[in-house]
View 1 (tube, chains in turn blue, orange):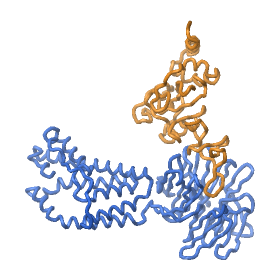
View 2 (view 1 turned 45 degrees about the horizontal axis):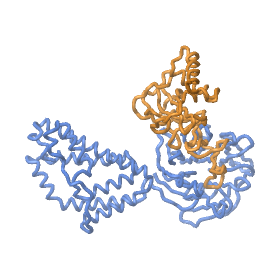
View 3 (view 1 turned 45 degrees about the vertical axis):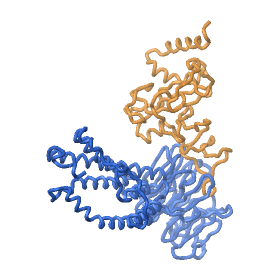
Length: 434
Length: 199
């Protein structure tokens, strides 16, 4: 290829540069397109393929190191020579670039390209995969232009590169092993199953969840580095340090889970607690309305209540999240869904997400951002937004009715989410880092 | 002797000519179609819809190339108000594609309300109109159900309705036409309503 882009072949130095630019444009565009397609395929599959890609990278490294031998899928062809004679220079140069930029239409001396394809599928992000593969196209273009730098004869430059082949092969093996390590390590957006459970809550190194046992919901608290604690016949836990609020048949209770001592309780048609002691939020259901209430136990003997929001009883309000002076909740009606965040001190309320189509529900807060679940007929996703920005980002997505998302808990850059099957009702707690 | 449907056809044509007045035929058909179907029980419209084998571009009766309006289940079947129905049997569904009862709660095939992973009854999900709400949210247009035409599909009259908006591109991505839309709108996507009236 380097012999093609010479002033003699192209007709002049100016046309040589025109051809190189065309070649580069074709190579980068074609490789970016391949990356986009692979990333989109990964997103459509919705499966966690990072470990598969890691395995392929290790296998490729073994091949390049000479430990195993197997043929690579490839098309043993070169770019059509006749194009240079039959087509205008801009057309054949772009065509050559595209043909080589695609990657699989020519010789494959090493397996690295196929590992990159697998990694792009595992990435499941068309834009990121496009950018990554565009670098491959740029490298192709560089190899067409670079060898003549400082060399009178471009082929001599290529041959000096070939002389370093052994070093390049070893470097390739090292890179493949590094890729395998990175792909196998837990990464942003990767989901880790934490076993059965639902309604997570996480604060201060303690993870709480509800878990069904013989049709009864119990609460499981897992402090980091300590033994788990179980509270029987409780649901919808909200943990804050040594305290946990939960719902039961009587109403809502707040207890010290280490000692079992009851701190307070609210009886009646109340549920969905959120705890940021001395504040306790919950939803009270009346005959006509559901109301989201925040109770202040600064003076335990005389707690005060204020209602934050309400919805007619047939609509859905909650599950609230209460962190660092903010409260978040959702409102679901047949007309649409809204995610609200309100500053308790000022009463300033923001609609951080709204939809007339999707279900938006179960937000959870940290000190800097809010996360919530979004559901359509075809997919569920976790979405997030920082308080100081308007951009909404998707951090996790599932498809199929056996992998629906439900309640969430956010701590730092880790989201815990209930993942459940509408067919069986069974649920799993999943941790997503982003 | 003339065929009965030809006789009724003449009546319908004369009626429409008198009523149309200053309106264009296309906009008149679009506005009057729904009223006629409701008031006459479909008799006049049925006469205008001869039993025929309707070509289906992507669903029966749709002989043009505009794509379906966004919908939960792959086909844009609606009720007379524009809310989504399950394409196979016409039962109401919510925006997640779940069967719903008269109060909008998701139910199973037996009519029992669905429950979540905590065993509690699931809340209602949004159930909104494919043209007026779905198109507006997904594509940013102020859209309205306007022009319509009728075909005989599965031995019953199907009303195919244009979802019209000011957009110069239709949902397919290419240039939109005025079609049966009015008021400066153009056809963006299509949806359909099965009347159940025999044809």
